[in-house]
Image (cartoon, rainbow, N blue to C red; front, side, top):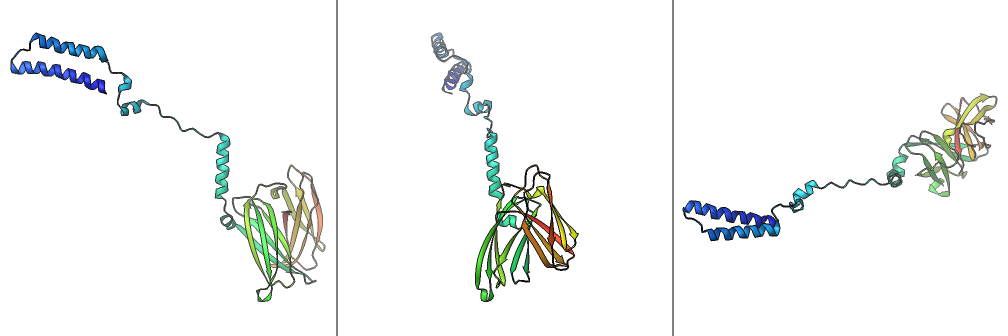
Amino acid sequence: MKLKLILKTAALVMAAVVAAASLSGCGVSKSEFNSLKERVAALEDMYGTDIPETASSGSSRASKATPRPTEEPERDDRSSDENNKSSEKFDSDTVGEDIDVIEYDYLDNDGKKFAFFVFDNDSDYDVDADISIECRGSNDRNLGKDSKTLKNLESGQRSYVGFELDEDTETIVRTVNYNESRLRGTRLSDIGARAARAQGGVNLTVTNNGADDADDLKYLVIFFDGSSMVGFDSNNLPNLKAGENVTLPSVCYEDFDRADVFIAVTD
């Protein structure tokens, strides 16, 4: 920039001298004119007459610069970011709003009390559920606590947990915390179960439709007469190889018109 100003000044000096001579009608002495030419020539010899590209202003230089592209993270980093984002999005209370829980209470002929909680997962997440209950009797007396974990409750699937209660239980306080499941072990979506009416109850057929062996499974059959629960049967299932099925008898000692079947992965 300094060089450009020097050359511009020299040109103006010469122009001014020539203009002054023309306007005034007075001549400039040859010695003065030659002296000025020598000064301009000296400047040209010292700095040259061409202004290099790098002497441009900052704004012009910036306009010619190639912007550095934003670097994409490696695929592993992107995957990690997506996983972290997924974890940040998962919220137990929000997910729980899309999971229906139905409680079935039952008192058998021996005076034992049971509670079954059926979970129907309509959320977008596969979950594990930590269920804690507190049994309370008359005058809100604490009769004891219990807890279980419901595993591999995939989106679109249903499963259950069951508790045996204190005989004096009048109310149950239930707390559920959901976690995003890694689906380790047998998946509920690979297991098919149906109940066919038979004398004294139903025949329960469970099939492993997955590619791997299925183990650590249990079943629950709830018998209904209308909307009332009139009995249940629950037990562990034998291990099933891929493509294998098993049929078991399930007995009900009361009249019933419907039997619902639920499968769970044991904790």
